[in-house]
Image (cartoon, rainbow, N blue to C red; front, side):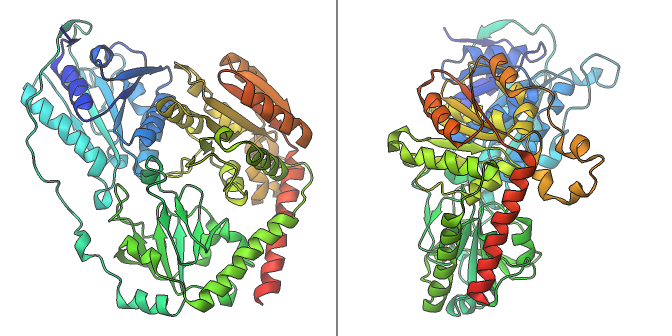
Length: 564
């Protein structure tokens, strides 16, 4: 006989999760959440992973949800533990990823009466969820609990803007005793209802104003990451015939698709020959601030409501005109647009090929990518996760196309674009897929999410590359360097713990490289090493900033020369 928690709310949640196809759960240690842990543990269809830090646990579940596109639950005890799910919920909310935060709670009658690990948890995550609810078994029968659990699952997959996915928070109060078992609950048959529709896809059409811009060859597609497509690659890759500036993870291909397109700007402005009269956006908003600024005031249309899980667009420039069908992307580019943007694409490639930077973050990235490209296709990374800040930007400027394995996935936490949980998300992805997963991160981001490694089991497929330039190197790109008396301590903030010590603490094999030759050799060693590995790549911070400045200046010069 299958057993479960004696608490109906916990037993119902485990049963509904399994019914809806969820196969993974992440739990953090606690007592008040014992009914949930017991129910999940005893369900034969759910694999339970343990992550000590609730903040890391929630991002761990985010990575699992990204890989499986199911609302993976992350479960914690009551009190401040519940607040620690906040960063991952915010990321899932802005990236439109299904995630289920289940927070155990004290009974309602003791809230505010000074009991330990007690605070007002109900609705605490409302601003960054698409749905929140309380499952109070003391006031609800089993049928009500089942209906609420099923509704939460529907909302996680379709409750966001334009029926996009998003995170859900369920707060579940429990009375003691907490550790008793009972026979598992048999769920009532679900009532079949048609999915509520907020968008009529049949009404999507190309308006006359956009059609005129298309006919004039003055439309630019800006494609951001598409988390909803990542788990479906390659089937979700879209063919784009129009000029397209794409970020890694956009899952687009086409003759005029370019990565790192902000390098075509000169003094933050478009050359006249490239200046668009309309923008079609796809996926998440663009990362580059200079690119966003250069497109200020241009009318915008968005593709997404007829793509599974992606939903309606962001009004990035306060010029959003509406939604258009994905079929617009296959519109053939006009001859003059094809020629002009073809020259722009060639310019990016030619300047990139000419660059021979000295040892720096940029040359380390070039070496990393070039080494992967030299490996057999099946040996290359099956998934590449990158931390935010500098790493995700260098990834846009590198020739990753042939460096990753067939149908490989690229991901960065670009919903909020913070450094929270970058390692934890990669851990979740690797755990769900069992495939070779590489994470490229900075030293600050690596230490910041060190508790990602306090998880059981640790996926052996994870390989971490830490670009160690002695702190937050990206701050050398910003005006903070004009305050040399406090720059290093308050902005760059070199960590006071070594990467090697952290790697050994997590039981990983540590490798070190301080130049191109060592990096190529270390990558080969990482490939052969069993279990999780950490490759530390030491680069000079100041020199890396200078190399990057010169690198971007070369593109500006060529752009001005070519299109003036």
